[in-house]
Length: 71
Image 1 (tube, rainbow, N blue to C red):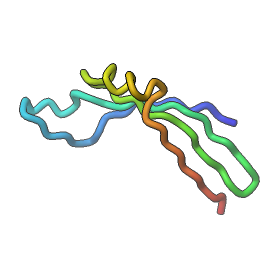
Image 2: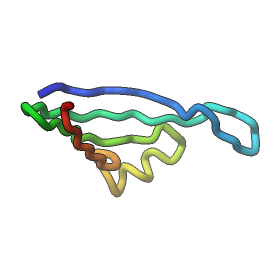
Image 3: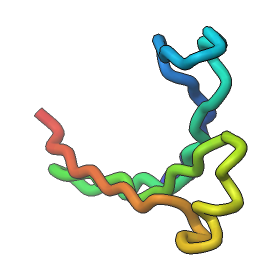
């Protein structure tokens, strides 16, 4: 099992004040390894003025999950 942590911003974002990077995302979670399969279970938290409003309803963040196969 591996702990994942990442902070990123979008490559391009248009808004009224032309601030390209006025928000971003914090992601965290775990990667579970198997012999043929792997999976990520994590959460995304927006870094923005409305972050507390979103965390009010989703206290861990927005859930995400992905599965993969080793080739």
